[in-house]
Length: 264
Length: 348
Image (tube, rainbow over all chains, first blue to last red; front, side, top):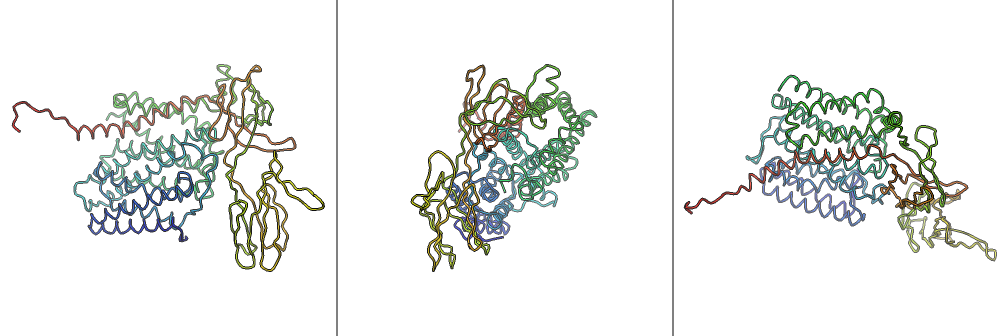
């Protein structure tokens, strides 16, 4: 763990310093103050992402540092969309997620700029990674809702939001098409770059496993979801577990060395 | 829900969980062993069972036939599986036996500049087979990110890096002094002229190098050459080690397809931009050099089954988006923007 004494590092720390008080304010029922701080954090996260983009001269989605920077940006718009369009609560969780995803970018992952290797110089690079990351944020939000459901907690602030189990389904229903698109775009890109649309690489297999867990979620919920709603939430949490392995363990553990190793 | 439908749903759930579990196990095997595992006989049985299950599901659940998005995404899965089977090595072998269609599933083609080649080393088969046409390599080149980087290490474990540009200096601090890059060579050569070694850049070849001076306090500046492709020799008393690195931006092979003496296709292939001709894709895979010079290594892959797989992808993605996003969006618009007609005579 190291502190980054750079403009990039400073921007990340200030963003975290906005997201965390936003979370505390929302928990303390200062909803308005929380939203203002959350938006301020988002604006800073955008500046941080654009700064990185200019610095490295390509879409900054190449390695884990840049991916987590992007996740820090994506939290606010997704949270706003879920609150306004889907009536899903838990904005406190979004603020916390924002701070959590920026922590590895600020303190753990190496921010050394890297030149794009030939395989990454493809127009599919940015959409493939961005679509996956957006789906991950939806699935992470779904996991928080599933946790609320399992703990039998009621929405804290908003009274008009939908129940956690229903919210979990809505979030997965929004995130799953993105997860599917990410998988298919990756496969198409693999064909262009490596000659095979499916290479049986550890990252590919883990991403297939996470996609299948959500496929299982939909089938289970259709079959027995009303009888055993708590198992629905367990499925959602299992999905997030496989996503975490796909995103982090596969890239960081040496046992999963493969074609996606440059993302480390 | 009828007993049959319930059984089908349970079977689907078991199949999904089984494949997820096998994928996790496969991830621990590594790509090559995982590929062998997923192409083994028990898994072939599984793939056929999965297709049968999907088809039975479509036939049995009226909802899957009535809701186009659900039909599309389930049919997409079937297409992907069928296309993958058609394009697999056993699929190629079966087609050869049944229909006499003989295609190379996958192989490697090594080719020197200005040469023509039609022999492909078949993957995992110790066999050389011929394509029904020839491939000519007009030129092969590597493109680099400029400038490269000079890496410097001291014996006490510290390290530095600097852009490999003429005129760049870096103060290392203390007794290590200052490193300066004087010249950048694309093709380094050195000759003796009037008993003095003279370094110069010779056009045409490739031997990238840097001329570097190290200025230590209390001693005269020392000159050295740092090469990209050769480690060079280091004096045991030298407190600094250096290395010159340039990241490859692209590999480019200028290819032509020659059939019956005529050029029928041409393309400069690079990573992410293969050439497609005669049922094969040609990929820039690697390069190497030997006593005869540099040669490009191309990967040749049959395109059998690819259209079915891509068609399946379109159905799957289209179906999933239509089902989860499109229907919701339509519903949202209908509930938020309902048109209310004014009834004549009704009071304001």
